[in-house]
Image (cartoon, rainbow, N blue to C red):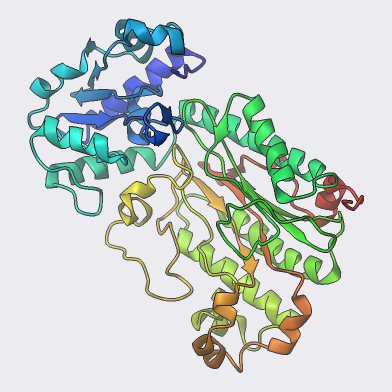
Length: 465
């Protein structure tokens, strides 16, 4: 079914401005495909359709098997009308001409006419392979992913990146809505913890809140007592007194704009002394890094700031030995905080990550091979209008801490006996969505508490049965 956004005139104006800006960056036509549904286990049963983010940025609607051709600020829509037989299953669908009017298209044509308008056009590879084949056929040339595009496609990619790095008011309206629903979802998850038997019960409460606002999840939810597994997608573990529950859950609006928030809370409603000690270190990194966000600041320096704060906190607890600055230089912090401090957020929860480091890294910069920097997703100077996450963490990952080479390398740096006192801390992450403003920052998710006492109050002191 077609998802319709709320205000057509606002949408049309935003889309017009975006394609006019694109016209100022490229002097050739661009064709962007939406993609198509992918079958789950037999042809008629498909995964929920979600259009390509680059298509959405210029077309605004979740149109399946559609394309837009943009040249000199003009937009042409290519889309087949739904067959009459589909009405039985999907209801009455808008006609191509109606959809064209909603997005401010200058013209609209059946999909078959696209090939005659495709000569000399650039594109961006869509994720599903059937659409990639269609792209290659229509353009009469290979279409490669962003890591190895044709020269004209690379030029278009760079132009799209420059536009999508910062957000206009239409996008910010959507992003704030996604953030607000995400905050409500996390509060629902905390409240559900006292009665849930397994992780799935908390996940259900959180995703129910998102669904009730006619939104979807912007990524597979992480709701786990095994916070050391960074992207866990299993929800069968029982909730036990003494466990920490890490929930990384975000909402996505009907138009595709995302939020990304993580909180960690005690299943019992009360942090243990060891859990509270580590939580406060992560929170100090979180708060200090957010306070540093403003235009002109290097995001890499914010990551290193988080690393130093975490290293200093672990030294104070007796888990690490040495000078915090030196520990960061030798990547000792990454034993417990291996990932980057965050990433761009927009139409993708890791915005434009299909472009790889072309989007995340400023021109002339390359990803580090260092243990403590290699997973940094964003390495740019911050600009007003960027939306980024700040998400420091602490994890005891067995594959890292039990690795013989790592144990040998850091044998004099880590107080392993002291670390054993913190066995009830598998993983902690605290994440918020931060808009870079002209003078500083705005935390879009600030209504969701981070203070340990406030978190305990939301969860309740009642232990699960």
